[in-house]
Image (cartoon, rainbow over all chains, first blue to last red; front, side, top):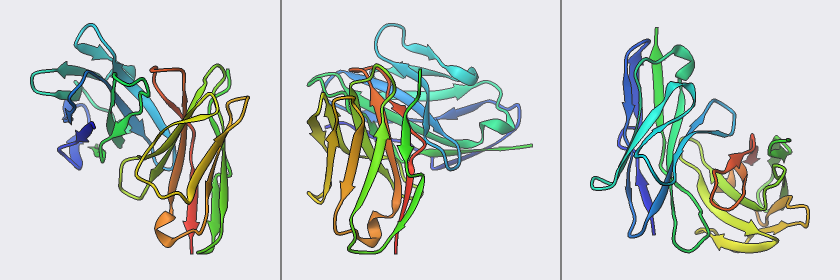
Length: 115
Length: 111
């Protein structure tokens, strides 16, 4: 069974600074990887996904992530954050084998952008 | 194209009661998954339905049950509510392995 570890529960950063939110996963088979964002009192919105192909994935709102198979990581990055990026970010993994494609989520990283 | 809608948005129930939460899938999606998100935690998978059949289940007791209807809408039923069932319940629809689209959630409070 797959698992996801988000190494930082909280990441404070100043506006216009770069940020990296870390995600590591564990699985014995091929995986699909996702990053979701959750604003207060709302559902989850997909930022980006890796299914296959290029390991550098670009998403919405200027975010990107890189799939590193050898390190089993899928870290999320943004070169310059805005106040509006303050939210909870979730990394998720689903195993390709089996066909159910049920994503398992990490515990989340709270990104706090200060002016 | 309509998104995923959940109802109700909030509700309060008493311990021991039963509750039904509803979800309308996004147009064209045939798979629905339900998640429980406790405060400060990531979503925990409850179960998934594909073409009206349960297609996977997480580590939740049998008092959590579900249905998917021919129009791919879905219900989550929870019997004998416990205080720990208080959480945000999220429904997500998808088409095969494409990304899951989430509704706004139902905030359930058990008192």
